[in-house]
Length: 326
Image (tube, rainbow, N blue to C red):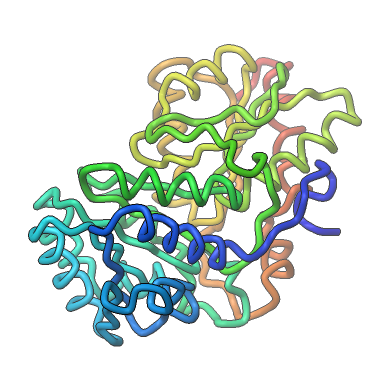
C-alpha cells in the first residue's frame, strides 16, 4: 500500500524533482536568484536551473565549505544564493561556515538540504541526514522549513526566496502524496496548517510523516478516535499558538518525524506543551541508531516510522488521556 493511500491522497513525483521545478520557477521570477551546486545537481535536481540559466548556476564541486563560503559572498553582493547539496554533507562538512558566514552574519542565503531522513534508502547511512534538524536548530537566526507535499514544496521555495535572512529547506528523495490541491497551500513562515480536524488527540508531523499521520488518522477513525493532524512545515520559528491550542483542545499529542528523537522536533514541541498546557505525549522518530542501506519503505517499517506505528502511539496516548496518566 502506498503512502497516503489509506487517507485517499493522490500520489506524486519524488520531492527532489518537485524542488527542481520550484527552484527553476523562482529563478524565472527573480533575476537575483543564483544556484550553487556541490556536484550533486543531478540528485538534488538543482540542475534544472543549469539547463535554462547556465550563467546563474555554479558547480563548486565536492567542496562543501567553499560552497557555503561562496554562497555567503554572493549574498553579500545582493544576490539570492540557493546553496544546494545533501543535508548530511552540508551539515557535517560545512557546519562552521554555515554558522559563521551565514547564521551568525544573518545573511540572506538559502540552503537546500536534500535527501533528508532515511528514505534515500539504498544510498546508505553515510548520506542520510538524520541529525540535520538538530544541527540547524543550534543556529539561532536560521529559519527551517520541511515541506510535506509538492504544493507545499513550491510554496516553501518561494517563501524562502522572498524571506530576508538565512533559510534551511529540507528535501527528500522519495515521493510524498498531495496533501494540498495544486497551487493552493496556505504557507506562512512560522505558521502550521491543520490538515485534518479532530477532538480526541493531535498528530503533529513534518515532511513525509504528515501523510503517514493522515493515514493513521483514517485508521483511528474506524476505531472511533478522531485525530487532528497538523502539518508543522516550519520547524523554526515554531507555531506556538497552534501547538498549545492542540494540547488544550484535544488533550493528547503524538509527534512524528523522520529524524533522531534526540534533538528533534518532538523535543521542542514537548517544551512548548510543558510550559503552556501539559498533556500526555508520545514520540515517533529514530532512536539513537544509524540505519543500514535498504529499500526506503522497508526502513520506515523496521524503524517504526509508519502510519501503523503512529496508530499504536495514538492509542497509547489516548488511553493515558482518558485515565489521567502521563
